[in-house]
Length: 320
Ligand SMILES: [Zn+2]
Image 1 (cartoon, rainbow, N blue to C red):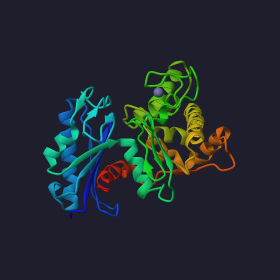
Image 2: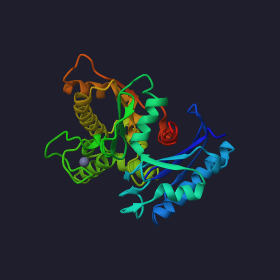
Image 3: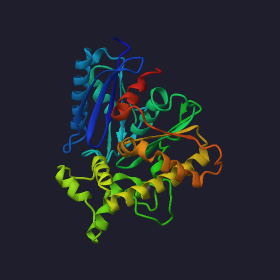
């Protein structure tokens, strides 16, 4: 049983956990909502509970796991296990020793890593990027995150590499949730797309986006709502998705010009939902900006789906 590892993908809305064997197969999994109030201690307790549930399904005690990896938002320090500035989590503006807290709760070693980077490495080792030695992971969801594997190794920079969502695609352009202007995420992130849809709707542009949102009992425009609106031929939804694809194509092509990777793997909530349908338009948009355009990188949709983050987190214990 010692070769079983735990993985926790800590997201702003859900905590996804998985117990993974040495071959990358999932032996148990559980998903809990992320607490919306309290502080880091409460989030850590919810993470431990979700991991215990997954371990129970896999028939293993958490103390017998080879270790538990965490893919975390904010600044996750792999060396110290401290997570800082996870602003989409309740009361997490400061620093919190997440690895230590979870180690005490679960009785096994815990490592933390950046959520998008570990998901990229999962695709590299076990998913859509298996055949490549270098790739860029683009996680198109609420924001647009990125991860890098170069020459078979993760590239973390000084800890903050891969922020592909904040590649500037238009100087002085739309306001980004990060506070700056013209970032790729300002056009392609789900949150920014929703803000733009709301603005245009309030100015009188016709759209069913918000009607669909209410009808399906959601409080935000989820990827499923965007999907339905597109199916209904909603003009505004189509326009904003096209605008997102244009921004993604521009930003990702710029990153490709710099790094020349073999592949681009597109994941995230919107990426997985729209990936196959929009892979061709995305490649076409990228093509406009590729400096070496006769040899474009492969563009693939992430294949591990919702579990990619948790599986990737478990890999923090794969090479130790
Ligand atoms: Zn930004």
